[in-house]
Image (tube, rainbow, N blue to C red; front, side, top):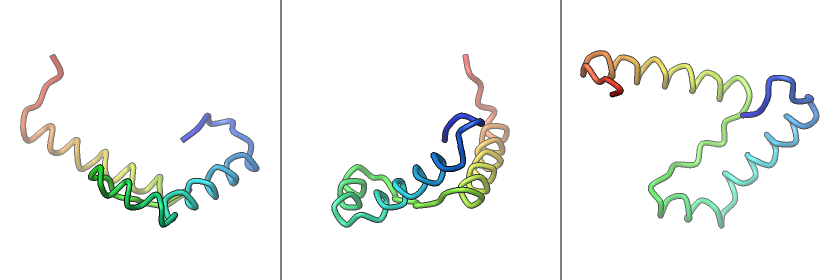
Length: 69
């Protein structure tokens, strides 16, 4: 994620570096040890995941009557 006005070249560079990190054979075991899953998604795939996750957790919150105090 970054500012809305991030230049396309910077966005592409960050996406490439992120994907490289998430698929790096030395990084993945570290993430696994911490209970994290590497999801090398960028662009439209990442946006779609965020939208799905927000909808999913909004349902969980509503059904569970969870409130922020």
